[in-house]
Amino acid sequence: MKTYKLKAWPDLPPGCRRMGHRRVLNQLSQRHVGEPELLRESGLPLQDLRQLLGHLARHGWLDERDRPISEVRGRTEAVWLRWVWPLQQWRARRAG
Image 1: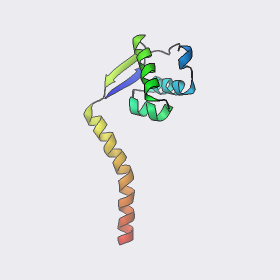
Image 2 (image 1 turned 60 degrees about the vertical axis):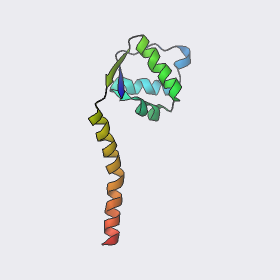
Image 3 (image 1 turned 45 degrees about the vertical axis):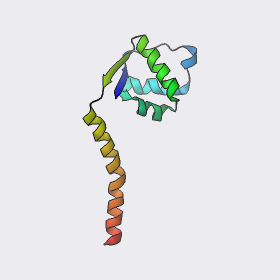
Image 4 (image 1 turned 90 degrees about the vertical axis):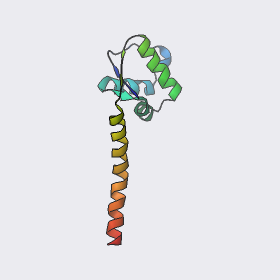
């Protein structure tokens, strides 16, 4: 999975000056972010997001990195535990 971060703030074409695009740029200016996170935060359709990322990459404004598999796996396990652990505690109290 790739992550992206802005190298410099771009001048966007008129078709990319909507709020969703600005949310993507805001996220990209702060840290490396993957496509799923950008989609969730911006509300943009996948095609629009990929078009914006392609535009940024063509102009050299985007830093791309590969996210290690261990980091991806660790985040999914953390999300799973965040939801399952309280349910396990509730069931234990109820059964007790």
